[in-house]
Length: 446
Ligand SMILES: [Zn+2]
Image 1 (cartoon, rainbow, N blue to C red):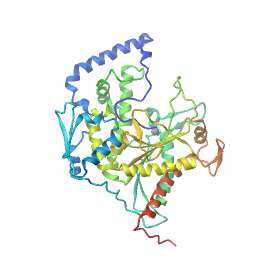
Image 2: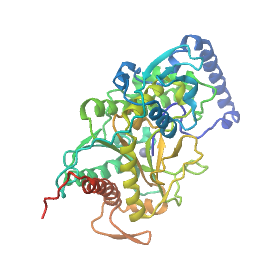
Image 3: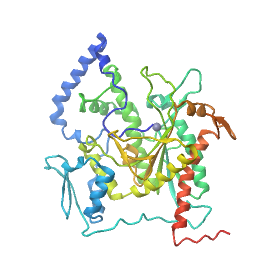
Image 4: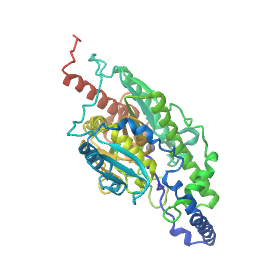
């Protein structure tokens, strides 16, 4: 499961349920109280609303190195094709042949950045890539970062990334991700890569804990009380729930991003997850039939997101970084493996409002997620099989068995092995292809 990017919360609405019982009525009154405080403090808070919660303030000077590096045509192409197909940024920018001015507000009174274009046509430079000269080890010289999704362990319940059916073994997504990544790491290392990790156990990367984030949680709840949908907890419960959300979603991924950007500096990052279909009406764990897969490349900012300064900053940072071509090639290569070896259908995110097609592969969609927004360099976000799909569930329950077994009518190796191999084969196959395409490469192997 992936973490949605910014403002909205992911749980289903229980707003109607508020109306049904007297206790809930009192909670609702408490909510109106919060709403009034929100309205009252809004004047004061106007500027604070322009940043996503628990976010580091954008350092605009970091974009200065992008001055005079792209043409107007390149800016417009990347902006509309990758990052903002709906054109929501248009009201915040003033565009000319000389450059683009970015403003905080639609009235364009508060400037944030003035980026100058390089004059003329310009050409997108080829992604600069060192190719290994060893046919057996096509990833030699590459630093690949693995980001197993979620924390798992003691935090799995807090993260709401675990379920159990009857007396079966509990399914904990963080643990499945880590198990798969360990096998993937071995394959990548065997092919010559240096593998680095955002985290490799069940401990959070951030030193913060939910209790540290109560003030932020209250601020977050007050930001936009009317349009937010919360589960029907007491106010105290809601504050705790929001503090937990800010902990495992925002603070944790920010801490991982600092590690990636300041220490690890990989050539690219693979974020790996297992997916989950929404539970039925009861909210209880149940199995469904859904064999689909999806991968994400960074892009597709929504209008709501672009109201925030930090989101505007990251759009410009990513647009100038130009990691998209690499994300598309790697993502498409992994997608091909999934299609050929598993035959799962591609997820269709058209009309979702938060993702649009890349055109590079039916599996690969542009989407703005915290991890692929904050991590520097190319990030390929892989959503694996649905944990609560009937066949996949049985496959997971079968554990890390040796050899092959009949799963869902097909002979399969264990799911961690197969998922890791699909991703590894995609990546290694692509770099082997690149060696063949490169005129400088000579195969000295016998
Ligand atoms: Zn996940």
